[in-house]
Length: 533
Image 1: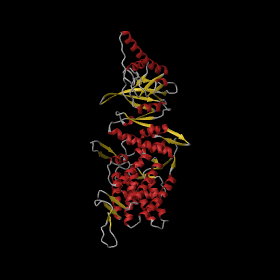
Image 2: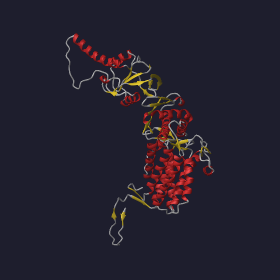
Image 3: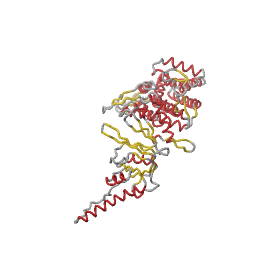
Image 4: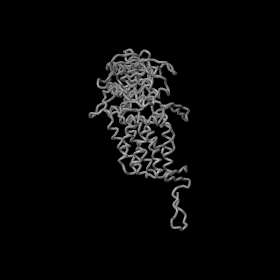
């Protein structure tokens, strides 16, 4: 890139960047950004809705994944184009904020860019377009807040509908009724009130992969599931209610920091030395026995002699657990993670209602799974996901997490919107009326925004194999006639949706984030590429 002198002196131009650098300006910038945005949207458009198809992702390491989850697809893409990278960041923002709605968010942003390309080619200034989009977004927020329906944590049926809507089109849809009950129960279990509002920490809901049975066998454990083989066969495999101790220290003879040699010259000295060691181990075991604990979870090793002594007293012990696993047990049972057996007392012990160990066949041989049921006071809860293992289970869990996050956001926000593209078509129709009152060129941007909103219901119609234009015209007609809950059903037909709800916050965040991304790209007037492409 160089600057030519204007005085005709013939002096050499001033070089600012390398000769291999390409600089794109004007309409060509718009074409670059719009083309990339539309291509990105088209990539995900076919996966959207209850009739969306899957993508097969083949990685460089040979692994494959089959999914229609927008967040998963975007996360696996290796994108180079700056506009595409902006869309990747948009998808990550939606996933981190709401845990669902990624595909719809990207499709809407893509359509906004498509509309922008048409308007910019008609010499509409980018800032006029940005102002129009922002005005339209403000109006859309007011419209959607006006049609949102309040919901409480006790509206079980509505919350289950939100979960079903989130699972529609995923691999878990076939048993969404059963799973919706589990997801809502899990979300309500970890919900906590703060200043009159509910906070649902989805990190307190664990997903465990059982790897056997059918998906309909999935169940909820108000506690924790631990995949770990027991160290002794004679350890109890079933216990009633009792107390739990969780240790972060080893239960064995403590090793000194420095090496030392002990000289033993007689049998009596040897016997005395071994007896002293045995006494130390017995004392440690007796402290646990006297505490009344029925289960010991230890993040370090447990000496075999202590393990046998505990088993003889009908106490179950799990050694060499991961630190995070021990922390989860402490959180679930209300125990404290202690670093010395001398610290065991009633204040550091946790409680449980039942414990059972089941043994399953696996590729590595027999494996044990410990089910620790803590009850309604459990600090966390676990959804034990049955069905095929490997990539199949991962896809099941992704579907469940989408539903869980949607339910959690609904409980926190307290509002829902009708699904099936209803909010988008409702906002689009009212925006068109609002645009009639605008005399400036922003009106064109607002009308473009409304057309982009209509891309959501039209994509639902298109993916079901129906005519997109016919579906759009019929849906507009139904809303105009006063059937305010009209939307696109699972068959791609226009109908009044009775029990299809989605989280209001998820929809609003998706639209706002998409609008911000599109406006950010529209402010770009030059693309400077050091690679020369």
